[in-house]
Image (tube, rainbow, N blue to C red):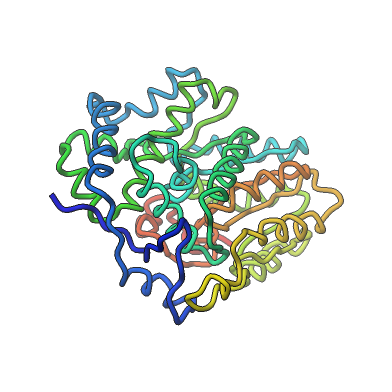
Length: 364
């Protein structure tokens, strides 16, 4: 059986080195030309964990039912309008609020060293997802543990947690249906992505079963489709709007669509790129951009009551949601839903956008 490969150059220390040249367009292509072997025993450990814990489930709705069985309020429907109402209520009441989403990238970071037997898969998956972000850094193992703890803190403070698989589209269910070899093949083809997708379904449910999501609303990870559809309703209920995104044209569109609102923009995705192949040449080995963005957001104050904060910053969105809620805002991780608002389809699931939003792209 072939061992899995992941798209990163492995160094002889916990860090990795970026190849040259580095630009936003070529960085990941350069990484993909290099290969790191995920040991076969780690592949087997991952598949064993999946089989032992989840292959007994043959009901496509088992995830939603499992959250409900854990006593959690669950919104499995992608377009029920219930989440829109919840966000509007928080805006109208001036109540601090946070809605975050746990996708494959977030799961790569949240589950770092959480499961036994997969240390190389964990490390290289976390490094790869960080390298894929516009704001990125070169992580040490200790910093990955710190980042993992920070992201768990965002779950603790969230009001809504979006999770994968509860709207009858579970990848775990598909693996249970297709069998262990199907899962193994997928892991070997895309170790970072597949492990992230599977653990983004596994891990939040395990938190729920431990009582660590008590009091939270569980929704679908792609809840941004509903909120994008209802964006005018949300903005009408907001006292002001704050955008955290690297899409400058979005700020312009909001200014034109809501001239009566105070629309502010915090630009993200501006961290300097590491240059060269030597550790001493690396420009950024800590996520300094997180503190900078927090300070820039805070500078949009002082009054955040009733402010709608729409955030699209990859896995860092969860941290910014927590920051915004602490300031008193209503914070929503819109992710690539912000791209939909400017008429861009950048994710495979976006090909179905007109099923969810017939008026797309005429949203703003």
